Structures are given as structure tokens and as C-alpha cells.
Length: 245
Image 1 (tube, rainbow, N blue to C red):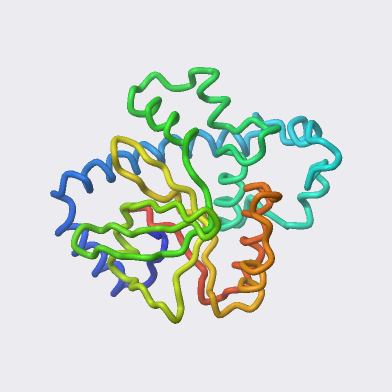
Image 2: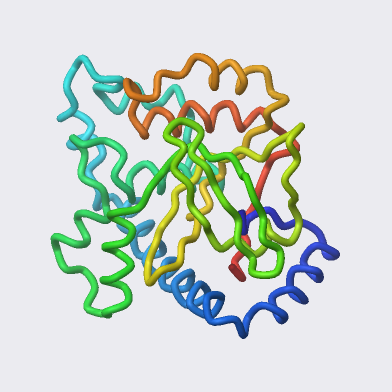
């Protein structure tokens, strides 16, 4: 998770490591597409928070027997545009496809041909085909900044580039790293979008979720919200954005 940075020492270590990695071809490609992704999200965040995305209209179209039938049902999750962690969840829920009945901002941008730049169009398509899930970290390649994610429920694996996690973290079988994240794959590289939802296996509520969750009957939308509510109670798991990627 390239958001897991904090303190001057960590930042110094991170910057030194970036100098060592930045000449590698896959890291150059990663840096480029992370910058393109940040530019796209800046545009999409404005689209959402400037009122161009009609939450009430889209949510009201959901079937009454689904997990949510109105915007009122979302208020219990207490998401605020003033909280940067909440904003990352709002962006995840509506920028990407999480409910089949609700168009994502990515779909709207593609339909309206919002971008002409070839790399932005390519990344938009990759965002539309991205994969979201609850992942367990199973391997870390320090030398090449690769981290292997395994979806807890589907067992699909992704080898993603994650400079800060590969720098500061290690695989611990007694206390595995879990996160809810979205993986984008473009030009043969994969990276996580950085949803602020990190979980500890020591958390009893999270372990209960793992034991009881019905993956096939739940939507990505509510899986994200549920896990975020659990993760917010993990004070030692709070995160902040690494704007240097």
C-alpha cells in the first residue's frame, strides 16, 4: 500500500529506495500510470463533489429487495467529504463499478469520451475492467517492489507494484496483512488504487466476518462499506496518501 507512510525517517527511507528503483522499466511505467491515474481521479472527484453525479437518481433505481434502496440507507455509514479516508471510499464506490444497476463515473467518462489523451483513454478502460476484493498479502519481492495479493474468497492472485509496502512490510504468517483494495492492470503492470481499508487478523470482528461472509450473495458495494466500518476501529491501521506514488 503506497499510502502506508508516516514520519521523516520512513519518508527518507522511501525516497532513497525510489532512487534505487526508478530506472527499472516496470517502475518507470508504474510511475507514469500512477500520475495519469491521479489526474483522472482529480477530474472525477470534481465531477462527483460538484454535483454532476446524480446519487439520488441512480440509487433510487435500485430494486427494493436489494441491500440499499435509497440514499437514506447510506447515511448510517457516515461518509463525509471532509474526511480524506471517507473520500477514498466514496471514490471507490462510485468511480468504479460496484453495483450493476448504478453507472460508475468511469463508465460515464468512457461513454461521453471525456478524454482525448491516448494514455488516459487506455487507463480509463483498464479502470473499467479493474478487480476489487479483500486481499491477503502472500509474498513480497523487495528487489523489484512487487507484492502478491490473493483474494480471500476467490483465491485469484495479482502481482502488483507497491513500493512502500515492499519497503516497510514483510509477510508474517502469525499476523497476515489484509486489505480491501482495487487492482488496475495496464500495459502488463498492476497496481492498487489505495482504498483506505486495512485490517488486522487479530481483530475479532474481522475474523468473524471472514468466517461468516457470504461472498456470492453480497455486492462489492456493501462488502467495501462493511469492511471499511471494521477497519475504522483499527487505530493502528490508519493510513494517509503518499502523493509521490
